[in-house]
Amino acid sequence: MPRFVQQHPVVLSFGTVHLDAAVPELKVAVELDGAAFHGSSEARERDTRRDVALAGLGWVVLRFSYHRLTREREACRREVLAVCRARQELFGVR
Image 1 (cartoon, one colour):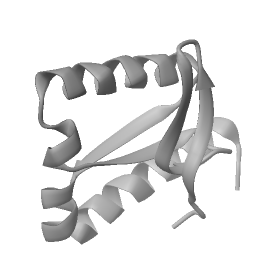
Image 2 (cartoon, rainbow, N blue to C red):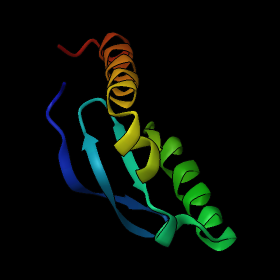
Image 3 (cartoon, rainbow, N blue to C red):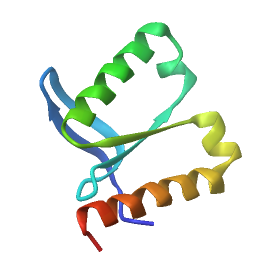
Image 4 (spheres, helix red, strand yellow):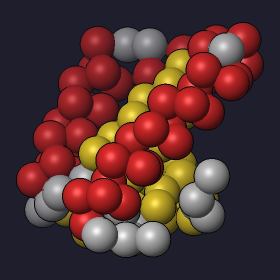
């Protein structure tokens, strides 16, 4: 697993966001979505706008619910690793 930076800041056109976990050299962000902060339609809209702005800067955002992360930990880990490996190949990073 690559080394992740917690609360990594990224400046977007509407302000600075802090990614839950990030591999900056691969531009991979992992966001952990709990129902308390991501359950409303307004929160989902905010997350979508944020993800689109990050994609515009070349970031890929992987979102995992707290429920899934706690119950399917290894599956989430495999998915994160697969994306990181693909980005390593894409960017020629080792």
